[in-house]
Image (cartoon, helix red, strand yellow):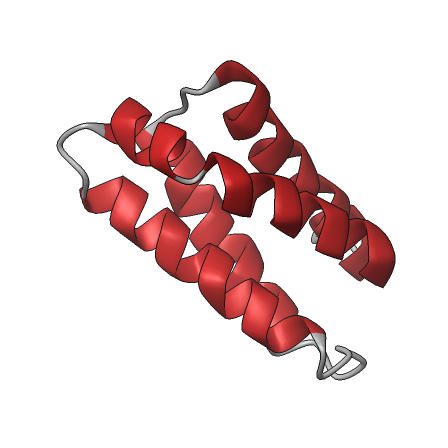
Length: 92
């Protein structure tokens, strides 16, 4: 059963928050970020203001998935992670 739009935003926020708090993550989490963003981007009621933020998160996930030092990648994006969580809170 697919999860609804709000649940997807909450899951996205949870993963980003965990990356920010723990300064570590997994390749599967990065892949999940990519899938969530893809799904949210095609949602018919998606606010146009959210698309640039979602695109940034998508590239973060993609680059993390391909990184040989994922924890370092996450540490380098601490400020963005915090901003993305704040942005998602405003959208949801």
